[in-house]
Image (tube, rainbow, N blue to C red):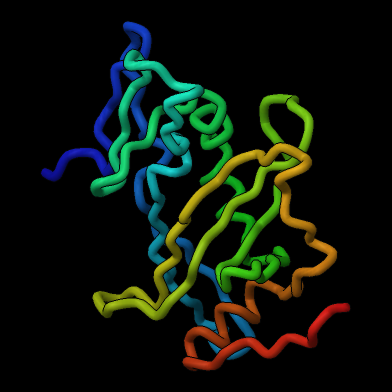
Length: 179
């Protein structure tokens, strides 16, 4: 049997597991596929880590590597990430926004009572067989500082089911430019 998707981390003398970020298959029906679509869901370590900043992080910060880039464990992101499976399982009936970087964003409510919202950034592409129709990769998830939050008023909103159908057909979404 393979090990966990993300191995446990030792943080402040405590072992933290990432069972909630194990890959799973999201199944949903769409207009073009009423019998269902299977979506392989996976997560980046950006859901529980942040960019290393020598001015903010000391040598005791728990390193999390993203390839050659050093990141550090973020207890706030880790706590918020507990809600990710629930948020993603709600996508079939949700709307998402296309960001300027051409990925997609789902905005949720923070599960820790903190101010602001919880933003989940992801990409969707066609699957690689084995009964999987699409792949959804969560690139990052965090609660931005208000001054750093992307303004959703300038983003295009689309139903997730429409995004799924378009991706299955290999079509690009066509958005009207907002002014």
